[in-house]
Amino acid sequence: MRPYPFLQSNLAALEKKNPLVHRWLQDQLASLGPSDRLMRNSKGLLDWMLPEGKSLLRSLSPLAVYKQWRIPENAEKGTTVIVGCNLGYGLNYLLPKTPCGHQVLVLEPRADLLLACLGHTDFSPFLEIGKLLFLPPDSGSVRNILSSLVLPCLFGKILLRADLPSLQLGPEYAIWTDRCREILEDLRINASTFRSQQDQMIVNEMQNLGRASRASSPAALKGKAKGITGVVLGAGPSLERFAPALRGHNGKALFCTSLQALPSLHRLELKPHFAMVIDPAPALLKVYEELDAKWAADIPLIYSTSVCPEVVKNYPGPAFPIWTITGLASHFRSGKEPVLDAGGNSGVALVRFLRWCGTDRILLVGQDFSWTSTKTHAGGHLASGQEFQFDPRRHIRMKNRWGQTVFTVQPYLTPLRELERDLESEPGAVFDLYGGGLPIRGSESIGLNDLPDRVFIGDEPAGVAGFLRIMNQDLSPAKPFWHGRSPGWRASFVSANRFLKALLQNPSPERQQVVTFFDEALHHLQSDPLRKPWLMNEVIDLAGVTYRSRNFGYKELKQCEEIFDRVEMKIEEMDRYLREAGYQQLSSHADVGQAEMAAA
Image 1: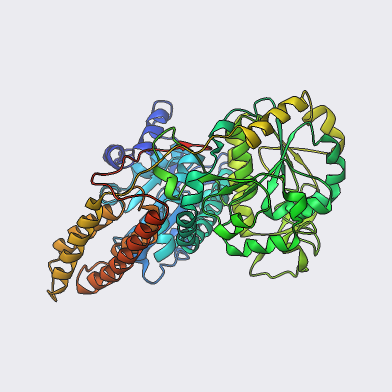
Image 2 (image 1 turned 180 degrees about the vertical axis):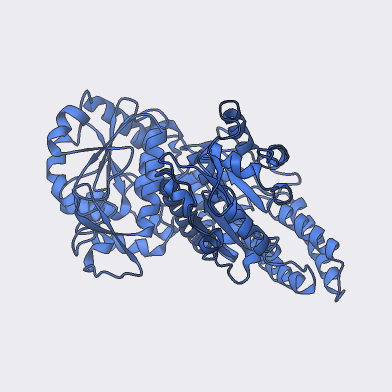
């Protein structure tokens, strides 16, 4: 038998369609070559010799293993992610049984086994049409690729399959399966949150536009906290235990928290230097029922421009805005205004903001991401009034560093992982004043006795005072960062709408004409950098029509017409908000480019 008969043709297809994996394999080829582990087992099947002398399949029948991989209904609207490919038995079972539109993604962490798989089946037809995609065993690449599966997540189904025979080879297969599961769960949470909150966030930004455009800018704070320790105060149950010991260090470090945690800190007599709010929900107004306005009157509030305007208006102290990605500021010209990637949690946003300000030593306090008893938050927090009762549909049991059972929910785990990725990829010391919550990878767990020697070292009160002086006195008004909109975009949209209505006059429009129109419509809805964030739900809906449909005809055009009707109402609403904020319509396109990112 000629070894690896299909390897070269598959590598050629990989180079063209899957360059990341091709590069990784090319780096391995010189040292690997055809493996001496290939063998025929007692059933005459191609098999793989394990170090202990047994083979991978042994007495297993591939059909018995892979018939458990049931093909779901409407499989053309889904994606399958497989961890481990062995010699290709699972792929050879799955690929012919799934529709052309069902994509299969494969992560094989062992180069020698992937080469053997590619060497014995011709996968090039599936690679050419994009039905089959191999993932490199690199955490960043895997996250980027899986996180891009927004359409199958929203309009189809994503199946994660762990290759059973491959699990014998080593722990990396179970580890990668868990990582993929986490990424896909994060995708589900983020996609559903984005869909439900994006319109409200942009409406909030448009309502805040006049105030935020004239307010002081945080740009002058960039790098000004260098050499200062930052303390991020959460409202987890452990905050109550640690707050008394932190009061004496208040002048030595920069203490910050969320708006929601301010009532808890007031009860505990621990006053932060500033607070931040990123949540767009009007429900945050309830914070003011617990907040002592006199106590908070000298605490500056940094508010995301996507926050409910009434929340900002009712704050008793000074407030200044920071623009955040996914909002109207996503495409500002470089250097105009800082734009923060706030993540989905105030703790994540505060860590990123402190890093942008120059802090290279951070202490996390009350960042538990879980709870152990009936109390989920420190007293005074919005969510502290109700006793916890376990619900298996919502709550997750996990273990803390002490081996105790703790409870959490997926909306806590998603920002925890986001924080961990930041901490593992960015330089600087991060300490977690550990109080029994979930461990935070990338941080060092410490106790109260460690604070003087490990955290509050070399901190000069003058440094903190200098930073606060800039925040309270030396911030300048925001620079102008966009102009009114050109009438050209709207004219093009009106023209596209007329063409759509003309297509609808034909009960059997030509498929290619409809496909071309959909492609052009998707491009046009994303072509104006200011309007794009406001129209993202319509962009996703239109992309969903093309994703779900195989027959582009009258039905799909009617769905597009409904989406265009929403677009028309939205651009009229945006134009009204822009006029109210004092922005006039231009006769030429506005100059809007890339933003300065306040945090990675």
